[in-house]
Picture 1 (cartoon, rainbow, N blue to C red):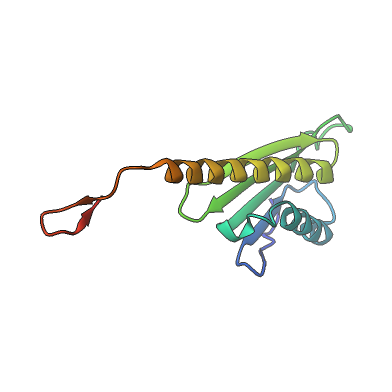
Picture 2 (picture 1 turned 90 degrees about the vertical axis):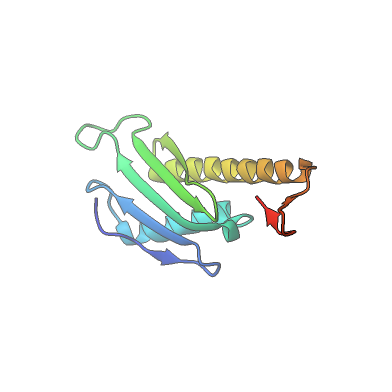
Length: 135
């Protein structure tokens, strides 16, 4: 893996990009990946604290093959466990785009389920002997 590309967005979401040794154009690629993620995650970016992107060429030692570029993205959501997705495609751009779309859908689904469960709660918090609320 080459060096880290720590980038920060206005809403404090950090985007770290790591590539293997066979992927070229690191600086331009980091900027491109950042733009793709910001676009895909713009509606939910305020709930994300950190995103780690790992780009690898699965067949770097062989001739070009189909779907040999792999993008793995891990997102850290506020107050929740990490969420991770992967996508393989013929180009880095396609792999990042596919993984970013998967990540956005997964986060939206996860947050939607959590909101739905909170809305369905009908039990009031229990009060302890001193009148304090217990969990």
